[in-house]
Amino acid sequence: MALTPDEILNHEFTKKGSKAYIATDVDAFLDQINGDYEALIAERDELKHQNELAQVKIEELESKRDPVSYTHLTLPTN
Image (tube, rainbow, N blue to C red; front, side):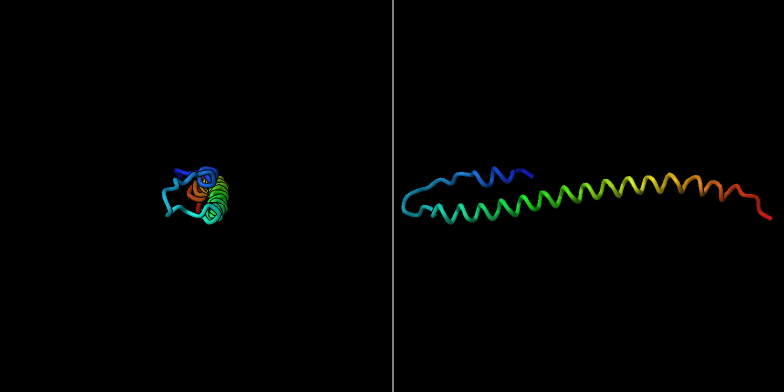
């Protein structure tokens, strides 16, 4: 992601002539964007963490699977 929440919040808009933006409207909008952006970053970080935990569990299960498969193949049959 190219922008941080603080960069969005602290961005300064150039005002020009009589068509300048109303500062309170811009500030309110940036506050909303900043909150949404922070929530998305937190959600992304949580999903990354969940993914890491799942990957560890997969590796754990795969390490148990291999010996079991090998044992199954080498058991004598009657």
